[in-house]
Length: 374
Image 1 (tube, rainbow, N blue to C red):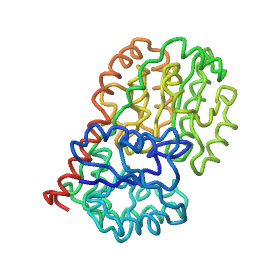
Image 2 (image 1 turned 60 degrees about the vertical axis):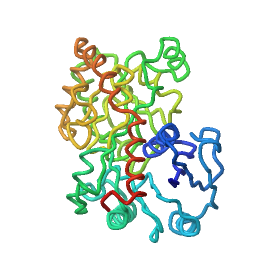
Image 3 (image 1 turned 90 degrees about the horizontal axis):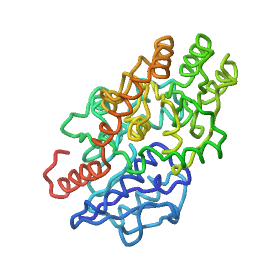
Image 4 (image 1 turned 120 degrees about the vertical axis):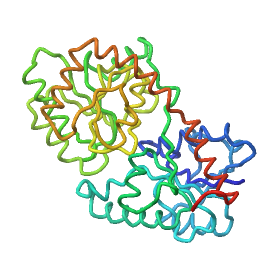
């Protein structure tokens, strides 16, 4: 069986979100192939950081261009179809000549439409409806997304395989020398609350800033800062405005994009990681922080309880006072932080990219054999 995969996001200079998913999945696939082969489609030559070599997969570099999936990838698939095609995003060529699998990370643009630009919302909804109608099978990051597929698009559970994401082995407690070097290089404070992810509305950063300011106001003795690590996404203006207007603005800092190699030490240096999103398709930073033994505060909604279970403290992402209380509890309760730091690596170890790769290949083989419902 030849499995074709759109690998562009794994070839991005700055990977985030789905780019990490794509890169980790590609890296895990070769060991699970068992006679199958891979053909990876790119729109630029592979970078030095691309996870696969030409010995592990056929790397087919196609010309770049607008509407690449429809105009360029679609034409290539029709000329030289693989046995099965997989898209790591909720997007497929209109006329795909072979059985296709599409990943669905979340459907927030249906019930949280205001958190996207008009253009993003319209394109994403069209793509999701097209994929729901035309993909042979769907792969969802979580049971929460599987439920959303049924609710918003009427996709039965029999057409969706839940394949939780994994945690890379590089996420583990960093040694003190690495943490010290990172602190010096970035001028990090000794104590801080960390957010990791793109700056965009769904990450709920305005409320996190408000909760942090509440905490600083009632506990000025605490030395903690709020550090936000991540590239800009969209509609980030209100986030910067909230930080600038905050009474705690002297203790709030945006780090910008942080290279993958620095993330384990950065997470290990934090007193706690706060990801209090309004929704997540999965929530990789939660898993990665738990693997590093860093205490986690996260939301009690969408996929996040699936990922965190009892290894994180959860809060209502809309309740700023409750969020402030949770921050204070994690910062001041050393016993709780210790319990979570011990549970975290155990919980994170349940999620592996090998299992994600196996789930995808199982669906692809069943489609190839004609034994899976489409």
